[in-house]
Amino acid sequence: MSKLSDRKEQLDPAYLSENLNKLFAFVEKVRNEIAALDLAEKESDPDLFKAMNKLLDGILEATTDASEKIMSAVEKNNVAIENLQASTSDDEQSKAIEQIIDGHNEIFEACAFQDLTGQRVTQLSKSVHYIEERIAALRELWGKEELDKINIESKKELTEDEKLLNGPQVKAEALDQADIDAMFD
Image (cartoon, rainbow, N blue to C red; front, side, top):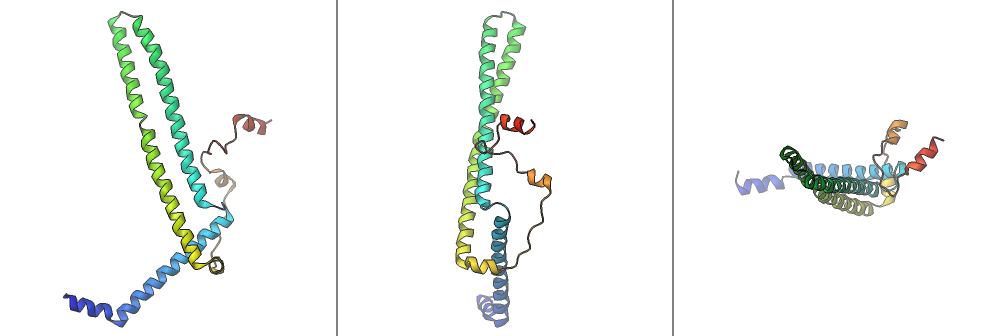
């Protein structure tokens, strides 16, 4: 098709009407989704996005703690291995000790996962924050009163087991072992 015939098609009232209807339907769908988010926040967590960022922070915290514990244990083992190696003259034992040292070096290298995890989770957190800002802008644009007028079905009630499935807690909010033990007393 030539540019002229493309232009005529775009100016055709039926074509314009069809595309405007699609656009209006899409905008209405977005508005309903924003209203559904408002309802979800009212029914559960008052700030869904902050909760998501807390979970992402928990991932960072847990992977950092695990990585630090692993590296600390390997460092302690390396000191013991160096002492053992200094006290042995047996070639077979020395070879076995070298294999252990090589394994420890591999563990240190594998702990680089924590840096990669941290970078990726930070990017996810920034993305969640960006989405939160865009949704807040749309909420402001439509107005709370208008969004409240939209009839959205409430989500299904969670079972008692589902209510417990919140994943690992961030340290600052988690119960310590003494509190947990006290629940069983």
